[in-house]
Image (cartoon, rainbow, N blue to C red; front, side):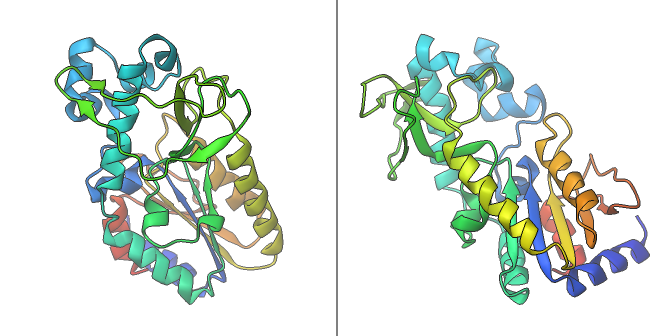
Length: 274
């Protein structure tokens, strides 16, 4: 990476009229959150699951809410408690100040389910949580297609057995409840809330077609490329858009789309002086 490229990216950010922030799991690393990249990182965060031989993809499956709900709620309950106890790193504040400088003409598209952007002060109506939210729950059978707020409930867990000490149920039918998160092999996910968010971002994108847009992508990997593909699609489809990809490993980008910053999220934002 050349100093000239950073200067170009920085200049584009300064001149932009609108900001699209796209973020993957790497966005939370500087806050101390695990990104679950590979079994080693996942099992470091969850030693009991290493003993059971369960990796992230196997664990992030709705089947456990049927076959072993105590295990399922231990996994998602631990994540819920962890996210609630985490303070967003100062990169969030830097981005929020940048959005204010652009008259709050911004939107966020994230695969993270951790509620960190909301905690950092971003407008919930300007956030797309494409894989859902751990702060919202639904029936495991999606009986009434209802989604409700977790209401600050905490999940007590026996970490030795890795079992939830309390189970949560659907208020409509009494079946085991689950987070409103898209999992692997998931046919019961209620996409209603996320679809409403998508409609809002589509309307926003239509409104900025003639504006200068900068897309700041942070920590979006290639194994589940939802965020990367979205960033690239918007960069190609909006005439005056450029993409800045911040990623310590998966930083490759087509030169005509924008610039790559081969650093972690916080360091990359500091270099860009956003």
